[in-house]
Length: 576
Image (cartoon, rainbow, N blue to C red; front, side):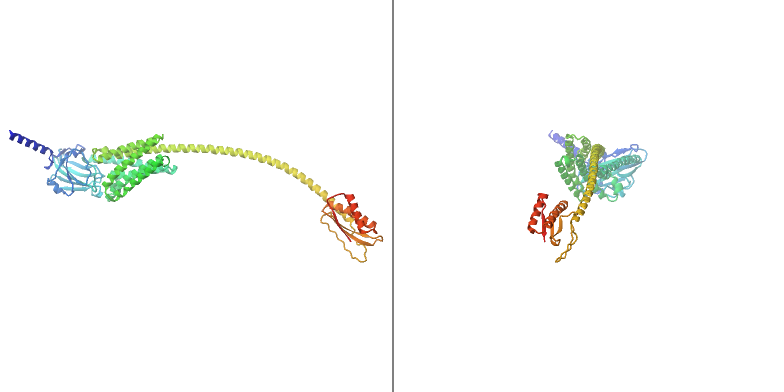
């Protein structure tokens, strides 16, 4: 009984070890396919082995010395790892017809992909491809990794695939068996879809370039930068860059992929800041955004000169933090009542969800599928169109504001013109009235001037007459004198002068003396006084010639004072 119990425990342990022991035996049963089926996913029909040191060759693998495990996923996703992974499976044509098929790995970002075929009587065939190898090495010139496989009816083909990474980041590995017709139709479909996408983005670029030139809105400039970096990233991410832009420089393409990812994330933060005008409305958050952009740009040497995987290990958390911060800015903008921020919110939700799905796929949390593989791309495309709609709304708002400003300016200009016209009318009226007053004053002045001229002429005539009369009073003839020689001249400063001369004689008529006198002042008043004074002096000096000269001068002063009275003028005279 004890022996039976011990043997029973041994059987149980052997069963458990058999259940959990790794598979090391021969190849599994082949996957039966029919050429009538257009596409078959091979992930769940394959086994996987990990080469941690990356030293195994195909011959080592075929010796069955490796530890294989059965796959439970349709798409392999090894994530961040420096190991090399081997995948093996067998294919058998279950049809009675020959099948011309294509083995396709539907991810263009795998660094090194070595495919080894052992089909029927055909010798082993190796295909070495990958996005770090020249595009010219591919048997089928397609953005995806495709190799042709021809099957005879019932023929079995054993396939080994070696997937290696350059710097520690394994991309997802979807392995499919497709017909040539399916491959060609899918390629045509994807070329059409992406052609429309890139064409639409280029149209948006040109439109926002015209908006930037016309309105000077810096948001349009950063939208163009963001769109351009996204286009470059998308071309690299989907294999179009390797096929058309850098087919013989594969390492350049890998650097461009990460660098463009970095740039369009930074451009996205710049766009959000300028769209929301955080520099003016939220200066503190503007400075924080500048720090985030500086941190993002510090990663550029890592992607350009160091490991690709290390860049994404650091960049993805930082990029997610940057996107979350922009989400906070959008929420604050909405809280302030800015309606155009709803476009940003919708765009952020689209790209945020897509990015989260893709990151979860990279860390092997979500299974690889069309939506997880292209989640970020789908979200980014939706985001671009939502942002374009937001910019168009903003442009319309700016145009309305500009039109309103122009209308207000026009109203102000019309008001200014009206006020200027009114002022002009008032000034013209005042000038007219002042001119009329001046004309009337000028006429009056002309009349007065004419009157003055006439008066002056009369006065000049009177003065001339007075001067002639005054000259008749002077004795211009020279009196006889025995001892003197006389010369006489009198030149008045004006027409009528206050200066005069005269002679006085004795009783016998002989020259006895000369008188020279000057009345103070000039003009008529002095002339009149001089004439009165001359008459008085003549009578006093000539009528009583025997009196003393002092007596006669005294009588002249008395007589002159009596006749003229007290005036301001005075008489100065010399009697010889």
